[in-house]
Image (cartoon, rainbow, N blue to C red; front, side):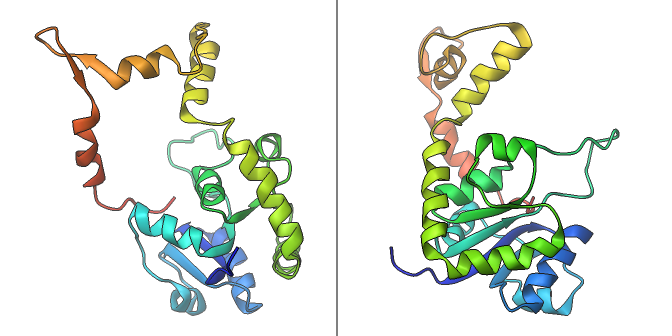
Length: 212
């Protein structure tokens, strides 16, 4: 495809780990932009496009970026036991769907879902990994193709089926879970059936959320 406008980007809230890793990339001249924060580093603040952007702008940026970074939170809300995150984040699915290859911290759940996703264990590995993928368009393309082929197996409907199966032992023979079908068309108080579609414009009017 055509060259993308940005080489490397990150969208998300600030924390010490993210700031430290992003600053390394910025100092190496590899970081194109950040969104979110608030960032303490003057260099990251100069690269910051905005503290918040709407979903449409997030997708637009991902479509213009070769490599999107995923760095896990090191400060968690409602996690008193300090359980370490293992699953891929929504950021990973969103960026891949927009055609950007994601580089993530290594987690078992990430590699179980996306075996071809490039990962790093230690912060010293990040700059060389990013540089290698920027220099090798063929490797970048092959990894992205493999990851995008996996996305179709991880829809919200698939997760709902899995959650119902694990929590209450419910199985759904259809490709589209019964709970999802029921939510799409609900009976009104008068007993007639009404589509849930009119509620969608209300969802689109919500203000841009804080970056994850």
